[in-house]
Length: 164
Image (tube, rainbow, N blue to C red; front, top):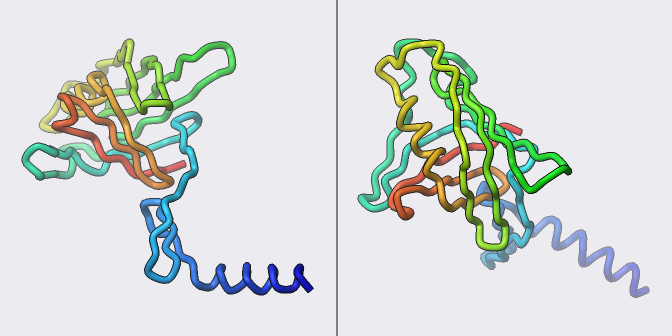
């Protein structure tokens, strides 16, 4: 009898619940914070916006004059051998790579190095702004679908959507 009641309760809860893009569970007008600990390891992201949090403004990255589908993408890879997270990405048409230390206790990130091929000239795009934001990131926020990399004392951040 108890098992049947629990089953009915779970089914009813399932139909009353929804989850928004921020990873917040909504149950009939009550908000329950998603306590899932998301990590950067083995994830891929695409830059959506440059955000000026101090002035409450944002803008999309400039992609012209040459567009590539992997433009402004970044991935984080970690291996069991150490605490280092490897960063790989594409700025505009130039690939870059580097290393960082990520602390999940206080959501800080320190990028130790960020190198680029520099194979293509920097056209009128945001390649330098993008790399500057990554290189100078000090904190981050992560949900199931979004990543924010903060820099300039949290005055600015790069907003990413999750690819993988």
